[in-house]
Image 1 (tube, rainbow, N blue to C red):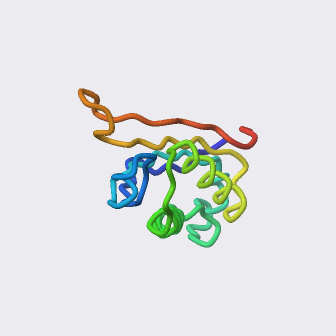
Image 2 (cartoon, rainbow, N blue to C red):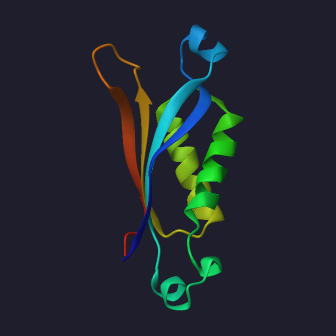
Image 3 (cartoon, one colour):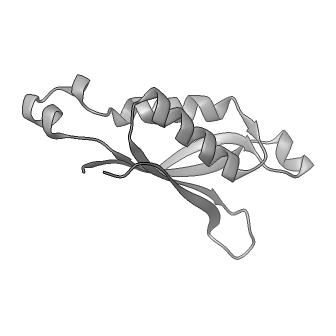
Length: 118
């Protein structure tokens, strides 16, 4: 199994359960690993056969920019579902970081794995 990854994708969105959080944009950092067979794209040097990380990044960024979600758990589940469906990915590991959410911590977050790792 090959992995295509995106590290520390920075996205501004409305996220949080507290009233004051619902009126501002906050930064989320997304780490993503996705199963993809890279043999054909590499052999043919063909982007159309690759899992285009730029397209995946744009999809996540555009989607999150329009959302108003309370929990990072919800963000993780919805992004995972979207990617598995829209990009025909068989497995992914997704981490959503919320920097500076807790005093004295660099950040908090969740990591989920969805699909079948082959």
